[in-house]
Image 1: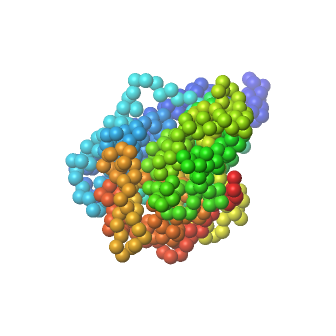
Image 2: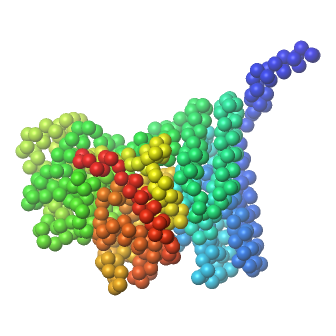
Image 3: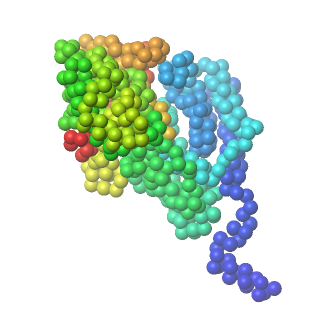
Length: 608
């Protein structure tokens, strides 16, 4: 007997995971499912408490306190809800704004969920209506109950659970600590603590199977330090997001990737904007310019890019053989033309809007200010046939190309698998392939986020924290692409109504008459709506706004600081930009500009 005990003690010393593994019978995915159900039950109970508080006419302070606890409970379930039920996000925690994008929704959907309740409790200009509050709480409860009591199995799998964990870190960075998820209450920092706590529970379910005690210890110490930092820095405006992201959040992302590797968990190949193997959200080398292309056959190749570049700069594309794509999108001007609005084909009038940069156009799921083109190929076709821009005909151009031996050879090289290389589709795909090659993710900001700690100066760092916090820029221009496409899915390009004036006259401002997306989809909430553009290379792409009304970044920041069109007294009734002033100091505005200047990359300063 003593010998057996001694042998077991030796095993325990030599293999510390021996006994744990031997008694481990429940698979990690099942444990996660049990934990998820428990947290859902707590969340529903917290909403019951909120419902009771509303029914008993509790004062606003008490309601806010109970609401806060419900929000924290939601954040503890958010990781798996957002991953497995993305179609429910808008009615769980979407913006408190009516929605209709035209492409997938022609009817206006009223907002629901936590942010609507937050608006009721924290917007002092709105009188609280208890019956409406109770209805909203009840709707939210029904959503969570439908998840908890669904008849279909959850279908959790280890590889997808850890993928969800990685996504949740991205979401916390881009939508959590910026205030996007909690725009009025600004619960961002305590909610980040709840997210990290839930991720810690989830990851610790998987750690024993990794059989690496040192890794497990390091991961848990890192999470403990992360929560400690959040606990010591709770103020929304002063929170150092740059430090938090680089010292804590990005390393956590990397550790999740390492854990997946230790467990040999790999995802099936799929098209993503940011690779599933990316070490963190800002790993610029892991972004794919093919993520939004129609299919793999349309992806760029070196041969297509060479052909597309030649076509891009060829005046054969215009009806008068005097204009090329490069006329309005000049490489030396970051693929803009430096004009408020580009000249029309007649060289007398102008086109409707400013020529946006083409750098990083590949990282946008829709094109044009009114989002009317789904793919870059569609954009090429649209511009080519626009009577004010090129006035051409794709059939005519293709016929001309078929007479050109040099082009015939280039098409054969680029589309060697096509029976007839020179076709309408191949023509648009060649130019689109060139556009997909225009990637600029090498800015000083990118270098800083990938390890070069001298790439940003102190004002640039402070500017980033303002951008992500007090100035609320990041709630529309989402990191890391700084356009209207939010991580972790990079799926939907947002459009906003900000109330842009027709001129820079601040004494007698008038709202610009361009209806934007409404011209395409006549839905009232889309009147004056425009796609949120990228801010990358913004210091090279003046003038600004869809109509080029502002010549400098100072003017742009002043406009937002005032609350957009509302601050100028010209806001349309459907303005989506928050109406309140930002109260930025002169120093803060300068710091913001320094940061924005850090988004200009080396590639964008060179002709390509």
